[in-house]
Length: 125
Image 1 (cartoon, rainbow, N blue to C red):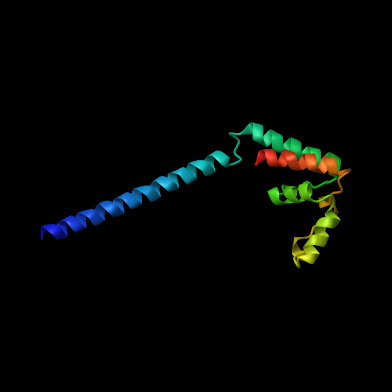
Image 2 (image 1 turned 90 degrees about the vertical axis):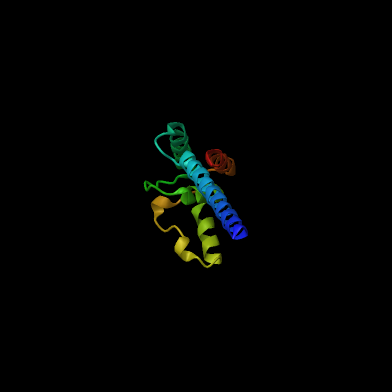
């Protein structure tokens, strides 16, 4: 009887230990997500994002007024012009990803400006 009680106690302690580890990991993950979120608590990051977007509007000609997610601005940073991006989407058989609204088009004045915008975006990540 004593050995059975000891086994049950060991099993319960082991499960409690595992539960504490899982809870601890969840707390850490939630804290990291809170720190990384783009909340009004980080006005400097928001200001830098807006400056980077204004830079892209000046030197790439994009007139987009939509609140695009990061994917759009990453595409603007990676491709010299929208036609290049759209061609890649055709080749990868994902034409639904193409930009068709002329307000969303871009055409960088030179590769140096595009690379600078890309570096601005990378600093914010």
